[in-house]
Image (cartoon, rainbow, N blue to C red; front, side, top):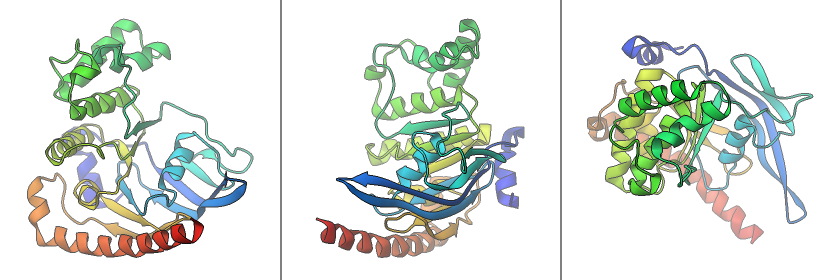
Length: 288
């Protein structure tokens, strides 16, 4: 763990000891209209425990396919993925088991609309019998208060703004004390002002917990502002093209967006992603 990352995850007295992901030579294909399409091609990536790793790349390049393999939503055809040295999937085990150590938050919300926000947050550990009902509700109230959600416990998701709904989903994910948060464009549909508030809220959560974050986005400013590293993926099939170290110190404020270094990084990453997007567009033209 580099010095900046160690300092970040130790803020508030906590150090992340879990959540180190190793993606080793992963291959994944799927069937599309009777033809085999390779989504991921010999992809390798190391993510240290406690890192915010931002994943960018052209639409349809295979980013979400990789996230789904880590989560255990589908299997891989080759290679291996480990978490803290434990094999999630690999030789003899093509598909990872879905577990509370890896929690996914998607772009489209998954809160139960008929349950209150407090009931939504407490639901998982109660059903899994990891906590008693009293323990779960006590912890849910504490986490909601830390996330600025006090006063919204008895409301229903539909009574909240989209930004607050995303915040409830993050809190619900943290109820399981995961080693890794897997975020697939969770803020894509939000307006710019709400998104900026959510970025700060996510960083505050990260500074409290040190949880490893694997975050897919198309928003390059979002990637630079949040991440320790930004991994630019190739057009399909997916593999890292270039990894950018974001050498802007944490904790971060929105003043960083106007810094010379931020603009330099934005230009470098944009050029890298645009090159792959052009390839992806050309591939789409040939296919369709």
